Length: 253
Image 1 (cartoon, rainbow, N blue to C red):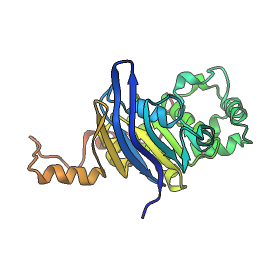
Image 2: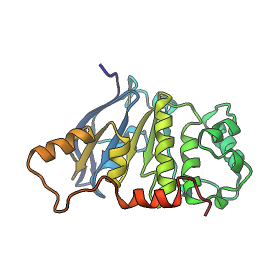
Image 3: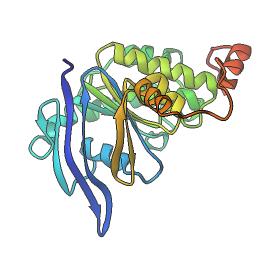
Image 4: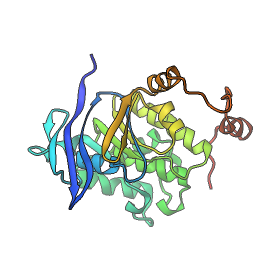
């Protein structure tokens, strides 16, 4: 049986009279890619920020790798990696300088080139962050989540704004990270991305989880209920055509 690495029970978060999260409960298993999906304002970002120790909760109980969020937030911070958005990096520093900076914040010895190799950016080591393409910036932001050798990483819409090649390359990177034993929690607005990457997903709406299962089981259940698409789905889609014609390789912008 899969080992639980994150346990959330009856989580509630209020902002004044507004109830952002309304008593949700779920578990994340060690070594899986778990997707938290929902419309804007559904409560998914608030939920993740609470687990990441970045936001306080109103009530509920959370354990991360056996550590209680209320009693051991410092221990939780040591074993998680949280993806920064591009605005969180000093644009004038090069990648080695940024990695050394973050390594110092974590009080962790770090080998910048080895870390950059994991995300195929070793040839950009001396480049300034501001000079990277969109896909390269996203890959670098994921690299920074690995500095403290975390058990769990949190990725918030990691492929937003990327072209199809960069998006699919990032999918492979995320799968590689999971294959090395790291648990991945991801939010995305791209349903094809969730279907490709996630072992299980929870769909949250208006502060409540309305469905949780594997993507395949959710789709099978929908079809079993008599759902039909107005147009027969094809074995390939337009993105497949685009990738086939233009290649899988990463492009510099």
